[in-house]
Image (cartoon, rainbow, N blue to C red):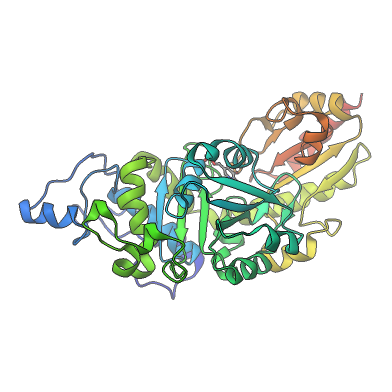
Length: 430
Ligand SMILES: *Cc1c(COP(=O)(O)O)cnc(C)c1O
């Protein structure tokens, strides 16, 4: 970490982690397109492999371009360190990997990104891990779900669909009481709108594919560690507190202190799981982050304008956006994300499934895609795409009822977005 805590967010998003290239003076961070790094001599190589000296060995573990991105994201989130991964889903596995073992479970919110629900309800079972899904507005239920095999609590800052905002402070207090780390997926909010570590999160995960990169070019992920959790206190996290056989009995927590999780994620996680971000992708994400605050402010402003306009449209049943006073999460959003409730919301159309299909087919400026957090405005009708294999009841529970369209508002002119929505709504109800 560079010693730059005195700088503001807009300065840090441009500068944190980067310095002119020592070899050439290049002002922009070069793409270090290399697999390996020459050792000074055999002793240097041995010290690197023993983790006695920090340096570059092989790009599955570390790469200078990726390192700049890691430091930048860690700084923006107020964390001690970060590890980047090949996708948001990779980041989620990387976040859980040092904490879990067969028979262990995580307590997770029912309101999560659809792909995360599948990863947690199906795929992690292959590792002997499991997830207990709980309504995170029912704080007693969250407390009750935690048992002696629970190793983490997991939620999203702003969950879509549904315009849901998690009461991070209340959930962090429960995790704290149980001696467990709270992991928060901050993809939809980004550190510009919310820094979960300030609300008690231990780890923050990102799909950098979305707003952090912001232009729909690459997939990537990150795990940020607050550096504040005591991994040794209760003996629940032996990967971090006990001797690591592959490093001559080194204890990560004892040796690396607040950077234990980050060092473990690189030295063991990336080494053996190989979910590495490549330097070219890191470059695109660094480019994106330079303008994060400018884009997020516009995403929020546009979402506010467009959601407010849609709410008053005669062909619209309901808009779920935590930035609107009609949302049950409006007050909470003011506390958790005071700069705005993000750029995502859902709209329920009169006319149900048929109207929604006609609506998405009639849009010209909005693209119908399975993505979000792009500079371009995007839309998806979940019931006919990502959620089409579910029953109508399951679609309803997932916030993807047949009459619901999810919108990811871009940074275009709000008036142009409204004009496009207006003509598509007219065609949908013709
Ligand atoms: C997209 C997304 C993910 C998964 O990230 P990928 O980069 O697609 O693997 C996880 N959580 C949220 C909130 C997302 O939007």
